[in-house]
Amino acid sequence: MAQSDLIVAKRISIKNFIGVMALTVVLAIGWLFGGFAWNLHPGIVFLVGFAVLGAGYLYVWLMLISTEYRLFNESLEVESGIISRKIENIQLFRVRDLGLSQSVLGRIFNVGNIAISSTDKTAPLYTLHGVDNPRELYDTVREQVAKSQATRRTMIVEDDQIEQIEGEG
Image (cartoon, rainbow, N blue to C red; front, side):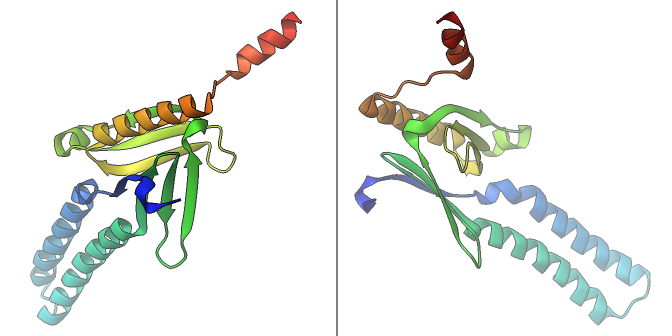
């Protein structure tokens, strides 16, 4: 696929991890206060406190760099992994349904998940997690799906309709 076909490229939004970052800060502060209250050695208290904080932020950073979503004219590509990489490719003409979900915090911070249902054999259900401005991407994907299906003159036939037609004949 040519780079000129690229429409949108997104990563998981850092806003998706506000809760994790806040929790690590609370845990680190709690450990600092608890460690001093228990008369532990100050070096150990600070070391463990910063280790908790560092582990939380390392987790967030790894999650941010591990997944990228790319929308092309005819397909959606999801590249994921840190050490080993996996690329999932969903042809847009195969998409049957799209969904958008946001939690209360997701609505406040404008971050959400886009669910994709397709006839793809390897990934019939796929979710784009933690997308920034999810409505914008949802609309863009929906438009590209419609264009792709119109270009290929794809018609989606539901399973129950096939059974009904076969039963009539």
